[in-house]
Amino acid sequence: MTQPDDAAAALGRLRDQLQRAGGTGLRQAFEETLHPADGADHRRHFPIADAGEALVEIPPEEFPRHTPHQYSTLGAPYPDYSPYHCRASVLRRLRAAQQQLRALREGWSIQIFDAYRPLAAQHFMVEHEFTRLTQLRGFEPAAIPAEIEEAIWQEVFSVWARPDHDPAMPTPHSTGAALDVTLVDEHGAAVDTGSAIDAFGAVSRPNHFALRSDHSGRQAHANRTLLHRSMATAGFQRHPFEWWHFSYGDQLWALMCWLDAPERPRTALFGAARPG
Image (tube, rainbow, N blue to C red; front, side, top):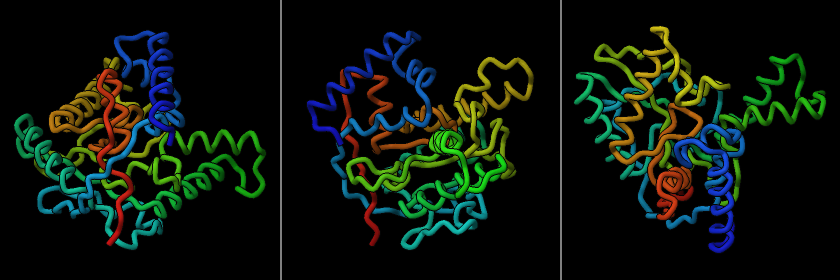
């Protein structure tokens, strides 16, 4: 983690870079010009003053779960808490988001795909995705050319945060402040959002379908916008490169708040959650 003066200087350089890029504001320039593998790492410029809240279970009777849990099924370890846990204030805001959603779409629900993810599970999934993408390209991980290996790691880190052990820059899901969510209708059926959660490539970008004129594209964009509106009303910030990822109180949340109001830099409320 950079020191306060260094962080202020780094944010000043980032602001100047984004202003030169143009667009309607810092957030748009950030989302449209930075590579996903690098952009979210700018969260390191924001200090953490952990509020000390416990992890609590997200009640399944209130929020449907995407089951079976994909990462657990693959073997990712969750030794202390299930992936359906988050910080207490995050749950309160999630309830507010669902109330907002139902004011707009009666009977609809926010479905939980993933929430708390310990660092060990992050490591497991990063390695799993690297191996999967390597084999899709016809290579074995132990015998892959260096330039292809680097390109695949960049692709992995475009969706998966680097599993950093530095307590001053925890992975977002390890804080219990990040949620991967989607929408289901009054019948419990998933609505069309245009891609699966964890999709690689441009389709994961929140506004990927914004300019589409076909019915499917318009519907996907409308549902992504509805999810964003519901979550943002409750104080969540959306990941700049993932339509499904929202957070409240972690460093990524602080970064996105800064992009909207750079004159008021935030301090993150949550570091890595402590089991037990």
